[in-house]
Image (cartoon, rainbow, N blue to C red; front, top):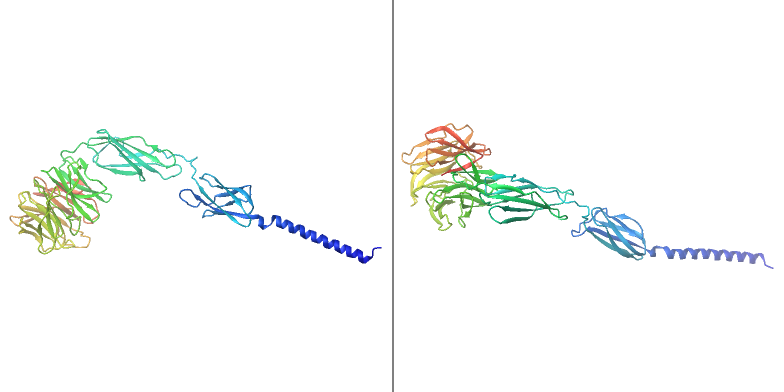
Length: 504
């Protein structure tokens, strides 16, 4: 017969045994699905080729776990991923979706790197380029063409261009590739030729798109352009020629700074100055702007201000005269035979020179480092001073030209005597000095108030002087005028937006 004590002991044993089984059951469950059965997937999404991080890329797995998005650095992290094999997917607009296989292990993070290719499936090609300049069937008054076009892309992709240029004079094909601007300047063109040009645009994804074919012509060689002058185009000085009717022809490139043209009738060429950085050289070219040749090399023109220096190429001579600080040099137009022929005794700088047609007399303008303390005088080829035209006066002077008879010199001088660091002139007037009588005549006549007359030069018949007139503010438009020496009040406007004249 069981006692109460035995019954109580048995119940207690059963309870303890049941509690042990429950603990054992839960302990087994924790070992089967606990932390030791999970891992992490982390990684980076970048653009293929550039390694630029891609933000907001959608990251998911197959089999399905969590879905996350990359941060601004292209990084992502998927936590609590059950161990096993997965395919990880990276998806972002504009790129080809990519899958990477990976195996998740317990209590570890596996790395996945995506390099996504740009998707071109929906990328549209650029619009056909529109040709702007030269205009269709335009006749260019220059041997230089400035090509301009426009193009757009639906996705605003960066575009590169190619330009093909042909003409009706030969079989040459000029091809300019990998252009990243919508302009191109080209020279020299063939005078009298008809040209055909076409532009292609490429976005680097689709096939290049072609523009229509454009056509333009170049005028025939000018035969009677006796006037030369300079215009400033987008910061560069550009040389033009013109005939008696005012028809103009551009001789030098607007991408280069060219100025002070001087035509030599015997050589049928034009000499001019051209700057390259801080240096200036003398060049020659044909009257149509072709066959440009540099004359100077080691010894170059130089002075207190490159815009104020001048040189001389006497008619009938093959020798060009130019200043370099306190020295005067002579060089053959071929670039050979450089010779120093004069040096100022006081160290003053030579800024301008003019040599008589018979090469017997030299007119000089000298000044100090600021362009002032000017002297205008003539010397013979032995260096002896012949005449002193102007000296010991304040203010600036510019322009110096001997008459063919060597009896007169025309020049410009600022009678205000004003001096400043910008070399500004307030009342520059034109004077003719008679080397025989030592008399000086002011021929500026009724010059408009507040203007300067500058850069005078004799006309071929010497009955007229041509010169530049402009406001004394130093920034306004410049005009080329001529005035009759015997009737100084009879001014005639020749060219607008023009300066540094020559008339041979």
